[in-house]
Image (cartoon, rainbow, N blue to C red):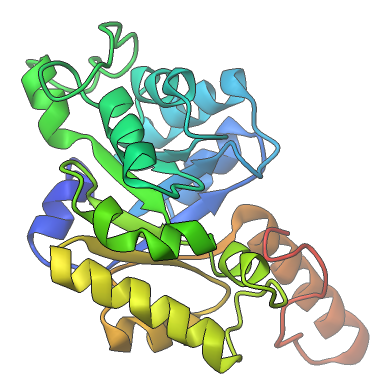
Length: 267
């Protein structure tokens, strides 16, 4: 996927599988970028990653040619602008609950006249020949996380905001906010109904529907319904799972087939 932007993949109608980085490591990000993911997200909300590490991880992903997203800590213009200035192709914005929240996120991500992003692409311009405000506005992806009761209630208004390119569902927060157990393994009918309602809204508005997953079977389940954007486990969870499997095989002569318990889907 070297040299191909995430928007170009979506414009071709391709489903995309992303890697998820929670470990603050440039080398770790480079390794994830070299695995063949369509995109890799640097998680500065729930990962252990600060701004300095984020910038180094974006540099490492740039070496691999893998489109990089940043999940920002919150819907703040400082977080969004700094992530994009550091070279992210787009942002995943948590807890978008209203149309105004969506407009705030898009505004911070886009240069005038489409938004209020200030000029300072300190790294963003290095990999993009002829970088300009217009070109950046066309490349930059904004994914809003719908994960609260307010977000679900206001879904139609949120998806009507120009510049919202994708919705990314965090099933755990979606469940938690609706009084259910946080999990990526969706079994409760009401939990599934909420996810399908968000998917239907995305289809109605022509917005890419994304969802956080724990394993390939979960990806396949949601892909069959029409989701197009997936992340499957984090760098920490993948490392822990592979290490556990190696130890299990050594001690018992057979590989561990399930992920180790704990970590809440992140580790």
